[in-house]
Image (tube, one colour):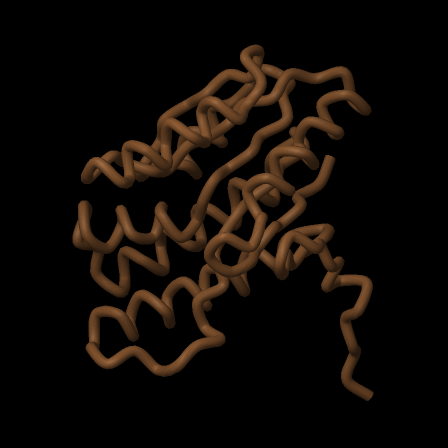
Length: 182
């Protein structure tokens, strides 16, 4: 049924838009929504963010907390549902700083996720941050995170049917604006 990839900067409105999109898909297809949360509470501020997201979602949405193995969860999903994954940037954070994955493990995880998205029969909405538009980070770990998230975003965007970039709360469909090489 297709994948919609929603990305944007911090506080761009991407999660709110993705939730609205998933809600609309739910109405159109008469399916429930399963919200796949990748965030983990690491401090008080993060806990507050998680609570804000929870309170904003409709009560009838199922929430699955899956901080590491989203691809595996998706491959096992058999019940018809709209899947909303929020977000890849925190998923990558968990791979890098909880799992301490190597470059080889990162690429294996990336391939597993893209395969799960391509094989999924349910509508999917995937959220991620765009972190590559700022200055080059000053330390190697931050540069690696930026680079890996860029590669992850590219792979998911290539697989997605639509790529929505949210800027200042305004969604723009990038695939409709895509330019082909001559």
